[in-house]
Length: 355
Image (cartoon, rainbow, N blue to C red):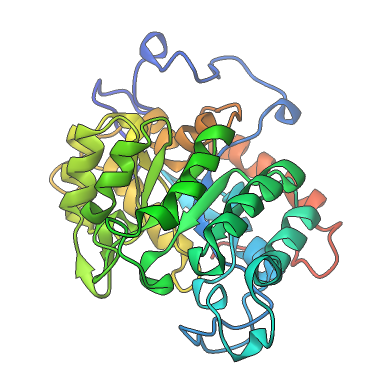
């Protein structure tokens, strides 16, 4: 893969004096133990039960399988990288009432469908961050109380709303959603909105609540694209017009992400893969191409790419951002160091070759 050329013509993007002030300068060697790169996936769904709605083939995509996939390595601008952290949640099909619930309802159902996510965040706290799935059909107050519990007791930092799977119109079911969003506003939690397919997940259907809760940061998952629709211009325009709207990159069309990245403020784009069913490497590639020359790319500098890949999201949840590795050797050493730590987890695959 080609090394990126920044808008200033520098091989690594902006000249040292013009790099983003929030990112650590790497002009002098920094001990690896002080570096924690921040590629963060916004949307992953490890499970011990195959999604009851999508019915993916094969065995359940466990937390261990997710960690193995995250470890890659993936080559970004010629350097081997891993996905350092990921927000995880149950597959959406496992958050609706089915025959598997039996007599469970309300908070009991919530705790049941969130149990494996909690288990994985406790088992891999340095890699996996909890995202709570709010289903108002379990009771709005039950869900709001659970949001607070999972945030305070388990360190969850995000809440997802999936109007299609849970069957409600976001612009009409306001009383179902306000208790959850008030709690998110109080606790400073990010809110991720499933978007991209009708009838209930067209991005602009969320505008009334986005405007009602200006202190909540809303992430438009999948950039308004799913197999049932392509609404990518709506999240783009919403992110331009509204300070608290952000775009998650998975599913976005490659030619459109180039157009959007030219105009959107750099803090508005967040990497996500929607894994499974998607494979995360292709969505890393979607953003890496921005570093290529026009017309396929836009000569994006590597520091801004690193913002898209994780630094933007890191800042939103209070983590320290980082510069990209300055050389292939540094990237390799970082992976080798963390591969050794990963082997301590039972059932986790050893560091292997490139995916």
